[in-house]
Length: 324
Image 1 (cartoon, helix red, strand yellow):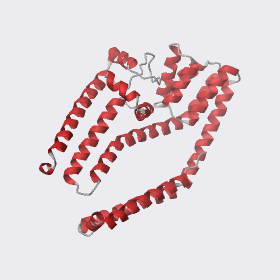
Image 2 (cartoon, rainbow, N blue to C red; image 1 turned 60 degrees about the horizontal axis):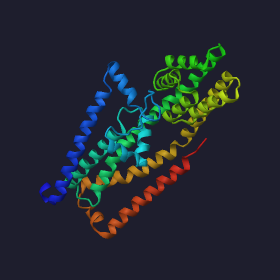
Image 3 (cartoon, rainbow, N blue to C red; image 1 turned 135 degrees about the vertical axis):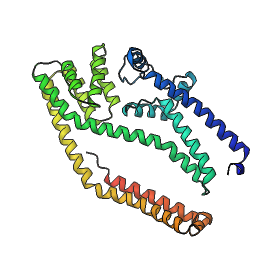
Image 4 (cartoon, one colour; image 1 turned 30 degrees about the horizontal axis):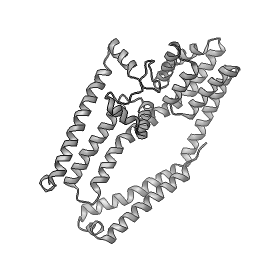
């Protein structure tokens, strides 16, 4: 219970909790204010965009609205990586607010685990897992967004190639794609078109597009456009060829995923079966597994089993990781 904890632990936990809660509240209020509707909200969104070029020209290299927090985050490579991940996932949450919420959830999970879980090292493991969970959610959102973008890309490039053959310039073809296709592809090409219309060079606009969309196929298209602008060539034919290659690559990757599905299922089963059996035994006979957590030999066996499971999963992952 709480009374059993040292007063220093209780005081430190509550202080950190209140500190991050206040900062998170400030961040949520600023986020809601920044995304308000109307012309004022749009201007503020343009001013608050980052260096990677989302949808504004007045970009500021700021990861947090507070100066000292922004300076601290710039020194941390993980913060920059999270910043780029949030950008690619099209998340409305800023980098500093994401880190605040993750830290706050981790502290709450650690305190609750200390109060209600008696397994050694379990509170620390739960806190780490809770801190990683928001990152996994954002990464999953990015993967879903990139998958949908890749599904739309070949047809969009076909549309662009037809527009170029009809005599349209490249900006006109991008306008057609932005108007005809839904998010995320339409939104991303709309941002690129806005940058070009406001004076950003085509090379810089395509580089910004590659930063926002983490897809090799899209990078292939963007680099081809940049090279064609420098050396010349039939742009419609280039775009048409790229669309065909992307479509065939997508089909091949689908076949690879089907052929490797059995190995992925095996890895999932290897993880779930020991956990499920242990949970069932713990519910039916709680005292049966106590020796595994209390005796030194039992702890050694438990750690060894977890290590072997991790090695098995990593081995299977390496076997089914086929780059095409």
